[in-house]
Image (cartoon, rainbow over all chains, first blue to last red; front, side):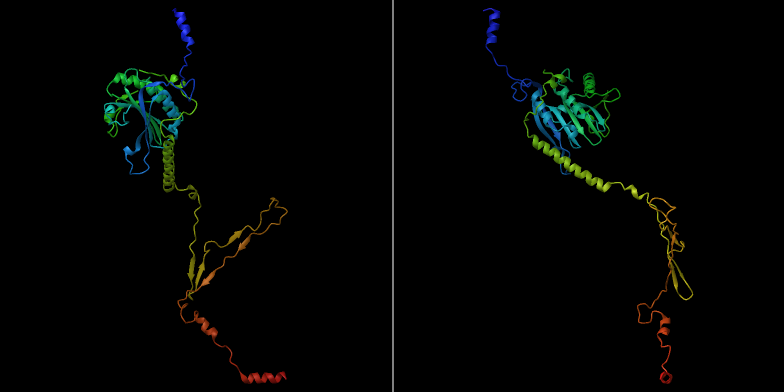
Length: 209
Length: 158
């Protein structure tokens, strides 16, 4: 049998292609897998003095595909709608969004504070999420552990948590990309704070971009 | 390693709402409840820490005159509330509706006389004694009845 004949016979088989989100937004069969499973956490602001940190920090849901991510992102309230003292955390696998977690303990975070109202904070947070789950911010290994947004009365803070705090070159590359993702100009500062200094009263950044 | 650029991920974003794998209504309810509590706490905070209204600062300071009381040699005290102001003048309708002052007769300002109240302090006001010692004299009969004089006058009438 010639190549042409095989091609013809294959075409004649009329195999139905599985639908994707592009062909059917609701009834799609194929999903785009992400590199890792990601868990969304939410820190509820305290409304009662008896509530402890462990009561306030709770996992919301997990996802492993692009489609699941969008379904969750579209459903949950955007940062601008959240009450003050709320946090969203998106962390890889089962890493807890705490610096005491073994995966975070030797790491640190690139952080930037957006003072004032920041009308485009929802968009900046979405860009940070896409950069993290799409793994485009991290060229080499999976250096990124998670990404966090803090909603406060006077400012929003977005931080990207890394596994290590001593790989200066790799961290600088990540920081530079993160600065682009957050649309920060040259005058805006991005600071890297190792988690080892988290308990200090006024921790000094080990890197500044 | 599966990688997706921002553009690729945005292409896969559905326009319609897709069901999620957790109870989104409960999650939203928690957030709404916290917002409601925070709103009430903020309202309470502002109620107790609100700034003083500034409208009192511009209020003119009214100096209340101290009533002047003078006591004369007879023991009479004079209460003069307007010791400094001799009289009050009221513009008695000098203005007109249309401002035509020529048509309306010019009225003289009305001068309100300041009344002076004379009060004598009396220690006996609550006792059985007469309030004013001069009243004792006033209560006495000033003319005695003269029967002879009365008879004489009757005769003349006839």
